[in-house]
Each structure stands twice: as C-alpha cells, then as structure tokens.
Image 1 (cartoon, rainbow, N blue to C red):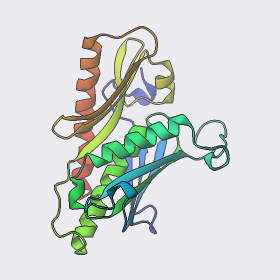
Image 2: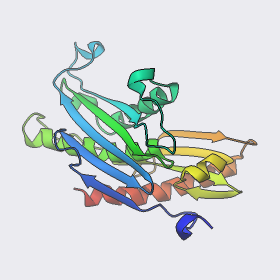
Image 3: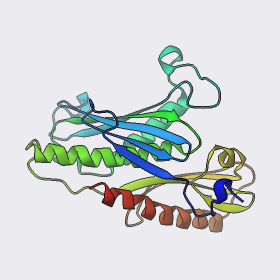
Length: 235
C-alpha cells in the first residue's frame, strides 16, 4: 500500500496558485504532495546573441533548490556553483517549454523562466515543467492582449510526470521514498495528444524490458491527461 492509500495510478494531492510572485510577469506555485515549486516568467526585450540577426524569440529556464527544501540543509549554489544535476534539469525544462510554441511568433524577446524548489519530495523536475508551462501560456496570452504580439501563436498544451517500477509495480507520481527504492525510474514530458517531448528512463538495478517501458509510458499518458485538466481550468 502506498502512502495515504494511493492507488498505483493515482497522483498525490495537487494544487496550483497563480500570481504567487506578483512582481514577475507571470507566476504559479505548484504543489504535488510534499513537492512545492515556485515557477515565474520574466519578459526580456532581447534575445541571445546567436539570435540577434533574426526575429525569433527564445525561452530559457533556470532551476534551483532552496537550502532546506530537503531533509538536510544543502549549500546554496550561489556559494558553491551549480551542480551537473542543476544544469541537466534546467536544460530539460527549457527544451520542453520551447516545444510549446513556434518561437518565430514571439518576436525578438526572451521568456526567462525561474523554477525554485521550496520543498522536495520527488518529482521536482516534472512539477517544474508542468507549472512553468502554464505560466508561459499565460504570459504569451498577456503579450498578445497588450498588442506586443501581432498574432496569438498556437500553444501546445504539455505537462510532465514521473513514473517508476517499485517492488515490481508500475507507479505514477513517485514520492522521494518510492523514487529512492525504484528498480526503474522514468520521467515523461508529453503533449495532450500523446506526442512525446522527452523521455528519461533509467534502470536502477537490472535492465528493464520493452513491455516495462510501454507500461510506464501508458501510465504517464493517463497521468498527463489528468494534469492537463488544470491547463483547461486555469484559462
């Protein structure tokens, strides 16, 4: 039995609070059980140097964990430098968000996304992507309503979720305890129609089968369909 009597295909309690950081151009606090991530977007009227000769926009992300987001205090990355894990996660977030929209429709501006983990209990990267995608959607809509974008671009709804095999069972939305014991650990970033943006799937013990991967993928698809109900309710 999972904590709180959760079924294998059941999420932890989820909530999203828009406008959590009022000074940002858009923000949201996403809570998935004990994992809480503050997502914010700021608009910069410039692009990276490699895009300066084009009219294309850009979306980039930064990710970090507060010192007491886990059971023991970690040193601030401002003091020790960013870890390889931090770079890997924020690149994943940025890649995922750039799949949402045709960047040529943004004009020569950058959407800078900050994802800060306030509490960590597994699935921080997937919660960050799910929350940040909603904020990016809202900021693009605001740019259009303010006349800064001539035509509202098509925005692809997407979300992310963790799955894994723990004690031989395929589980959705792993908490830290489950993730630390998982035989297979997977993260899926997926569009509403089931198209995949990115899959990270790793055997922690013995190699896993194609059937295992299919089972985890099917579980993630069902979970992301549920997550995207927040996309619709937050219009």
